[in-house]
Structure formats: structure tokens, C-alpha cells
Amino acid sequence: MSLVETERRDGIFLIRMNRPERLNALGVELRTALAQAWCEFRDSRELEVAIYTGTGRAFCVGEDMKESVERGTVGSGSARGPMPENPYMTGEIQKPIIAAINGFAMGGGFMLAEQADLRVAVHHAVFEMSEAKRWLLGGFNHGYIGGLSHTVATEMAFAFRFDADRMYELGFLNRIVDDDQLLSTSYEMAEHLMTLPPAARVNTLMMMRAMRPRVPEELQTLAARLREHGAKSDLMESRRAFAEKRKPNFIGWDNPEDRYSTPTLESLRTLEAATSKRGD
Image (cartoon, helix red, strand yellow):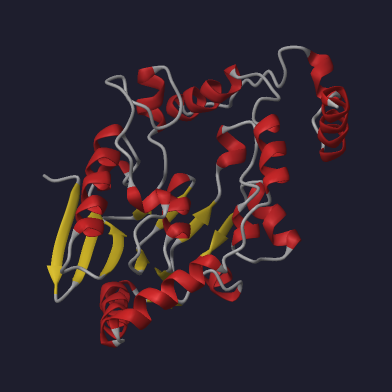
């Protein structure tokens, strides 16, 4: 059984994650197969539009945490070395991509759906931006780059779940459909894109992507500091607890006093000003 199934149809490329027994969790083998499929789409002269979907009850539930516990490390690395670069996640594919969301889209799976240019989902799909459960910083950027209100972005960042109807109302989804209409609707959208003048399709895509909000560099710097602010052992503890189906025992901070020295924009600006002054 192939972990990633692909189909070609009149310039349209279907990529289907096929690990239903693990809800398409992103283990090393699946990540590798996806990188290969997306490279094939990027490099093809015949393929112009992609549809991205999953098999079974989930689109993708994100990181394979059981595998992370077995490896003893977090993230997408492999014991055999770094993972191959996936051009879908780096945003270098200059062709439209439609996410056909067939079920749960959680954590890294939500990010896969979020990266697409257009999104179709079934009514029972469930969305969760899970970073706050697994890392030292919640998913602060999802609502921002999605152009959502600050209160909704905050709810996303704290890993609350959203159903498909609400995501449609918020403007995150283009269509919500019955299960048996998911692929047909996605193909209809892809076929429409194929009717456009090629330059119009490519140039419009580039313009729309250029207009998408981006988190300012100053806030990215703050996020990098906050990702280091806390007990790193909690990252693996969250995954062990999930794998063992128990309540996690978090430390919070190795030094309890660190709780009261959380990095802020103001502290970063003060540090930068002091560094600049010393350099004068």
C-alpha cells in the first residue's frame, strides 16, 4: 500500500495521503512520500493544478506523536538525517492548489490545509491549531495570515476546536459539501482554473499570494524568544502523555522565577536599543 496516492487527469494532479489507520499522521515515511509527490507536481510541464486530500476519517492529524516518542525527539527530523524539503510547505510551487478536507485537520494537518490557495471541506470536518498543546508557544500566526479578527485568532492560538460550518462563516473555507461531493466539487474548481488563460492563472496566483498577510519581522523575533521560554522537557511530556493516554505532568519552567521574566516586545526593543548604543 502506497502512503501517498497520486492521479493525473487533464493537467490536474490529485495527491491523497493514505495512512487511514493513523488518521494520516505525519510520520517520517509519509513526509518523505509527500515531498516526492509535491516535487513531481512542481517539476511537471503538464500538471497545472493540484488537489490535496486524505483517506479515511481524517485529512491529517499532524505530527505522528507516537513516532516522536519512539525516536525521542520532536519535530519532523529523522534518525536517518534531515527530511527532504517539501516544496508545498516552502511555498515555491507556482501553481494553484486546492485542499479537499475530508475530515480532521489538526496541528500540522491544519497547516497543510492552510497552505492551500482554495479549500473545500466536508460538513463533519474538524479543525484545531494544536501548537499550544505540544510546544511552548501556541499557533499565533494562523488567524493573522487568515485575516481573521483578533478574538478568533486568539481562540485559534489557544487550540480550541472549530467545526466546518464555523470555518466557512469565518471565510477560511470556500465550500462545504457532503462527503460524496468533496472530490467532484474540488475537480470542478480545478477544471475552472484550467479554462483560464495560462498567464492569467499564474499571474493571478502570484498576486493573491503576495497580498496574503505576513507576520512582521519584529513579531517573528518575539516568537523565537517565546519558543525558548519554558521547560523543553514539556515538549516530549505532552507527546508521551498523548501516546500513553494520560494527563500530562508539565513543569512549566526549569527555574520557576522564569515565569516572571517572559519576553515582551518592549523588552526586546529595550535590548535592541541598548545593543545599538553599545555599537555606536
